[in-house]
Length: 415
Image (cartoon, rainbow, N blue to C red; front, side, top):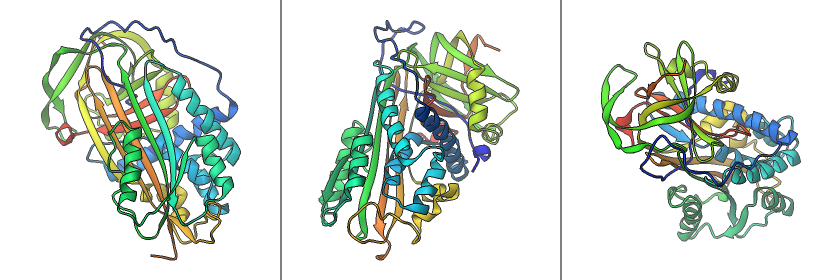
C-alpha cells in the first residue's frame, strides 16, 4: 500500500541538553564513523523507509485531526523477530508488509544485526539505545532455532515468565522502562489468559542540537492551526544555525542537525495558502528522497516550537490494512515459536512513544510489543519561523534510516 494518502513532516531528532550560546556548534572531538553499507543493509533500509511512509499514512488516516508520534524502526525490530517464528503464508505476509521480499530470512536477520551496530556507532555525541526481548509463558518450550535467531541477530533477552502472576506485567514493563530511561513505563496494560509470548523492542534517543537554541530568546508566539485559528505556544530561536533547506510551491523542508551532523530533525511545513494535508497527500519515500537530495546548506535565524508529544496506540488495523491481516486471524501460522503444538496468532501490536524537543536538543523513546495468543482460547531564507502544523521524523543521514516520525497539528493538545 502507498502512503500517498497520508502525511508528511520530517523531524529527525536526537536529543537533549546543551549550552546557552546559540549559533556556534559544539567543539566536536567525535567525528562520524562511516563505512560502506552492505547490499543487504541498503535493501533493508530502502524497504524500511517505504514501510515508514506506508505506516505513517495509515496512522495519519486515523489521527488526521491530532498530534501523533511513533518509531517505525521499533515496529520493524519487533516484527523482524516475529518473522522468525512464523510459517509459510504468515511469514510472507509479514515480509511483504516490511517490504523485505528481496531478502531471505537469514538476510533480513543479518542486515538488522549489522544495521544496529552501525546506528549505535555512527555518532558518539548521540545517546542511542536499541534493545530487544522475548517473554514467553514459562510452562512452554521455545524452539531452539527461534531462540538462536533472536539472540544472535537481535541480541534479544529470552525469558520464561509465569503470566498468571500479577507481577508478570510489572516485570515486562520494568524492562521497557529501564531500556527507555523511564520514558515508557506502562506499555503492557495487562496480560490476558490466552497470552503465550511477547516480542518487544525498545529504543531510546537523546542528542544535543549541533547549533543550540538560546533560552533567553524563547517566548510565547503565534502558531496558526489548520482551521485558520491561532494559538499561543512557546517558540525557541537559534541565531545563525547552519541548516539544510529546500522549498517548492507548497512546502518548505528544514533539516536541523544534531551532534556531529549524522542525525538530524527534518521539518516539512506547508507554505502559506497551502495545507498540511496537501503535503501528506503526495508524501512517499520517492518524494522525500528527492526533497532531501535537493537541499542546500546555509545559515539562518531559526524559530520553531518547543514541544512534547506522548502517544500510545494499537497497530492491528494499520498492519492489517497494509497486508498482514493473516497474522491476526485464525489462519495465522506461528508453528516455529514453540515445541508445543499450539494454534497461535497475534492479538495486539502495542506501540508507545514520547518525544521532547527543547532548546538543548531532543529526547525520544519508543517501544513495541507483539502479543501472541492461543487462538483456541478466546530559496534559502534569512528568517525561518515554524508557526504552522508540521510532520517530523528523525533520520540517520549516511544510511537514510528513519528512526522516529510524528505530526504536530495542535499545540493545545500537547502533553
